[in-house]
Each structure stands twice: as structure tokens, then as C-alpha cells.
Picture 1 (cartoon, rainbow, N blue to C red):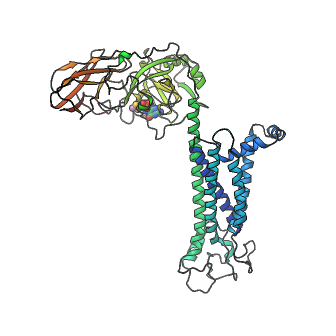
Picture 2: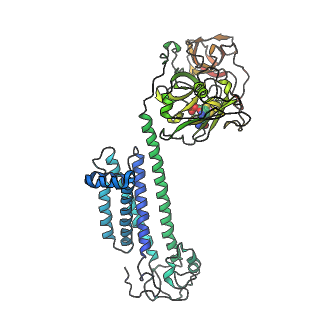
Picture 3: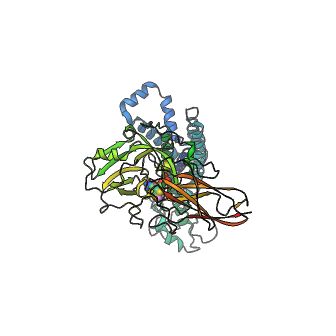
Length: 576
Ligand SMILES: Nc1nc2c(c(=O)[nH]1)N[C@H]1C(S)=C(S)[C@@H](COP(=O)(O)O)O[C@H]1N2
Ligand SMILES: [Mo]
């Protein structure tokens, strides 16, 4: 370290050879931010463990005498936690600033001792506390290492800010100075932009003292000064981003925990269990109730919204006599019904898997809207989600069918991917006009004033689910045994009419009636099976369904858009 035996004349300037205190403090505080953000992120990734600061705060609460704690609560009321955490942060910032100054001024030993002491407090504080204490301790340790490494790096880079030792240079082409001649003030002049021109045109061999004895015409002064400030800013941005990510992860984890703690009420008239007779007993056919993990997911959300019931409410508004707003508890307090329904996506291809059946639990939509009082001028019910997706269907669809505000799916609270805390389920309609997930609002409106999300994007306004059928087994392209009975099987659906018949065609032979699983409800699909004995060679298998109103699926093929895909699901297999 150089000794400042030639102080620069300029008042307020640092003694020669010293890095200014502000740079050290800045390095210290930014490194603290990096360390805290890193530990916070590590803690958050592990099941949303508490941030180290919170753990230290908790430990302080544990340790202070009861009298002091009571005094704090009496004095600060409910903001006592905030005051405490602010206190912890203020102490940390002060310590980091001091340690930063020591670091840049070459007193690295004392700085490290100071920081190590603080780190020990942060590591020990969460140990032994309930919850994931050791995760927090580990997070603090790793975050501390990251913070220390950052400080070490910044302290090195900060050396570029040292005021050169040796004779003060009041004028002329100073090494580091920009347009302003004295060397001192440029240090404090913020981003070293002004210094750059001077430095890049620095004449070689001008006889002025060198800052560092390095070869080459590198524009060292400006570049490294900028390097320090740029690195500091970069670390700051990264720390803020990591902190934000940690907060986001923690809120997601909180919603997961919240959902797991929910006890759904029973339906007023629980449905009987699904009869085993719905199954045709052919392996490979879709189970009658689709397990949640296999249930298709379609939405516009890049990341599905994690909505907490805390603060959530469902509004019913628009063309109604009186608006309603229901909390989650109020929603659960309404009479609950169970509905077994097959829902489908309009963009499903013939034979595709964007369709599934679940046992939904919720309150009747018609009851709810009757309570709000639908204005006769309304002809559309629009569901709006917390992320502003909208889906609208005619009020006339509420014809007594079991349309519900669903809170449960297959015996669980709605999974977050499927709309927790609440969504609409309207049997018989494609999802894009009806099944709003993460529901925040139901608006009674008119088709001539509001359109759901997908309507201006070219999809049909009216979207009843059409009759469809699918071959689940054998798989397309499969090789099957020749000359032996082959069970073909799958599902067919036509909510809310229900399936009356399914036919299978082998090659260009006659359509033959398939055997149907028991009919469970018009709102749900039906399994089917048909046994054929294929001769060796290639075969084509087709399926078509007929609904309870007697209409049979059209063989005309159409791709999805603006309506559903049509045509008979057809596969090729080889028998050998
Ligand atoms: N909030 C919201 N709800 C939505 C959607 C969406 O994009 N956002 N997509 C709809 C569509 S197109 C379909 S097919 C169904 C799919 O429901 P699922 O993901 O639970 O299977 O959700 C509907 N509800
Ligand atoms: Mo969809």
C-alpha cells in the first residue's frame, strides 16, 4: 500500500494511493446484497425456507428478555417485526460498509474477521429452530461465501480508483482526468464516462507518473474505473433479480402449502362411486376418471398463476341486479355438488388427448347467478381469470345442466395447474368458451359488447362439444398377432347428450357395433371395445360414435379451427 506523502491539493480529495471510502462502502453493501440474495434464493428453492435475515430476527425474538419484547410490542405494535428486521438490515449494512472500506484499503484481515463473526451469527441463528433450520444455515453459509467472494473481487477492482501517489498533477494531460484538470475530483464524478476521451487519446511517453506499471497503451484508468462501477452495478442487478426470484418462489411454495391444508366440504348429495361396469376391461383404454397427473393442461399462461385464497374473491358483476363478492370460505359454504364431466379442448386433433374426465366439486352456477339476479338484457356469461383470460358462453346454456364454480377435482382441491382456487366447469362446452381457470370474476354481459379471449383470434363464438371417439389400443402403427382375437378399445364422448353407440370398421369391411361400457352420465365419456381377428398383413381400423340423439360422427375431415376437428379416428396396424 502506498503512503500518501504527497496529498493532492484539492480539498475533499483522498490522500494519494487510497481508494475513496465511498467505493469501499459501495463494494461492501453491494456484496452484502449479493450474499443475502444468494442465500435467500438457496433457502427459497429448498421448500421455501425462511431467509437468513428472518431467521436472525426470529432468533433475536427468542433471545431478548420478555420485558424488552413486551416493550417492543407495546411501542411498535404490529410493526414490531418490521422494526426488528429493519434493525437487522441496518446493522448488516453498517458492518458491510465498514468491512468494504477496510477491504479496499488493504486491511483485509480485520475485514474478514468482522464478516466471519457476522456470518457465524447468521449460520447459528436458525440452527435448532423448528422447520428447515439447517437449510437456512447452509443457505447463509453459501450466500456468505458468495458475498465474500464478491467483496474480494470488487475490492480488487476498486484499486483502480486509488488516487495516484506522487506529485499532484494540477494541469496537462493527466492520466485519469477528463476535461477537468485536477486528478482528484474525477474519482467522485460518477460513471467514468467523461474520463474516457482523455484516456483513450493518452499520449505515450508524456512523462507523467504511471498509475500502475503495466506495459502497453491500454486505456487503463477509465476502463478499470468503469470496470469497478460496471461490475458493481452488475452485481447489484443480479442480486435484485435473485431476490425477486426468491420472493416469487416463496409465494409459489406458500400457495402449495396453503392448498395442501384445505379441507373441502362434502357434497350435499355425494355421487356414488363410479361403477366398475363403466370399464370394458381392456388394458390400454383410458381410465374412466383421468388421474390429475395425466389430465391435459391447456392455457395461455406461460407459468400457471399461483393464486392464494388469502385476499382472493370471486366477483359476480355486470348485468345483474346486485353484484356479489365471495371469499373462498363463502364459496365453500354454499351447497356443494359433485359433477362427473368430460371436458375437452377445441384444438384437439381427431385421436388426440386434449380431453379428460374428472369428478368436479363446486357450487351451482345457476344458483349463484340467480342470487345476483341476471338482467334480461344479458345474453352472455363471461368468466375472467386473475391473469385476464376470458371465456364466454350464452346464458341460455344454463338450462339446468350441472354448470359449477368448481373448487375440487377428483377429491382434491383444484390443482394449481387446473385453476386453484376456483374455475368454471360447464358440461358440454369446449374449454375456451367456458372453463375459466384461476377465476376472479363472472360478468353478465352481451355478445355484442364483450368477446372471450379466443373469439377475436378466429375461433367460433358458439362451441358445444361435438361427438367424438378415439382408439386407445392398439397404438397406431403397432404390430399385433395375426389370426388371433385382438381387443380394440377406446373412449367416445358427446357431452351432455351422451353416447348411444360406437362402431368399428376393419379395412373397408362393414361397420360393426362395439361393446360399450356402462353409461355413467351424459356428461361423461364411455369406454368401448371391439374384438377382431386380423389376418396377416396391414390393416386399417376406424371408429365412429353416435350420440343419444341419433347423430353419428361425420366422416368429413377438418382440422381444428375455427371449430373442432372432425373425421373418424383411423389407425394402421400390422398383423404378423
Ligand atoms: N385462465 C384460463 N383458463 C382457461 C384457459 C386459459 O388459457 N386461461 N384455457 C381454457 C381452455 S382452451 C381449455 S381447453 C381448458 C383446459 O382446462 P385444463 O387445463 O384444466 O385441462 O381451460 C380453459 N380455461
Ligand atoms: Mo382449449
